[in-house]
Length: 124
Image (tube, rainbow, N blue to C red; front, side, top):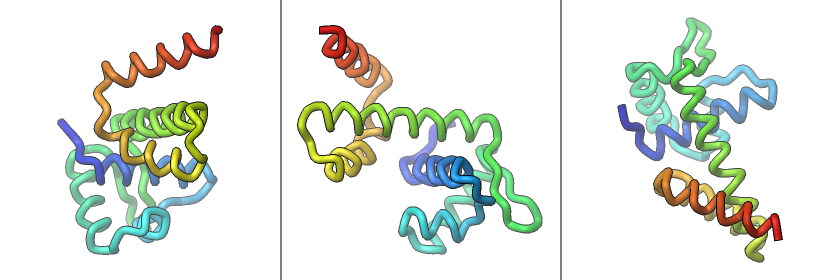
């Protein structure tokens, strides 16, 4: 099943907040991403119905193994792209913003080639 950019953002946010040691609720995702409560509510419903998350009776959100895999993939892409852009001379703030935009749309093939190219540059 394909997942939209906003869904990837939600999963990334959930994983990031959980890694900070927080029990994650929808309102935490709203605060983290700056999205509206209704948008996040609809997004969480879709993610739950698609098997990416579970929500307990107290509203605590957990990632399923499928959701965790998507979230980790996006976080890894984000970190890699941010570091690559900074090495190109882009300011950290702009690199962070641009990585967030690119991480969703870049094909796996292009991302792998970018990583390979960056690794060649580190070897020289």
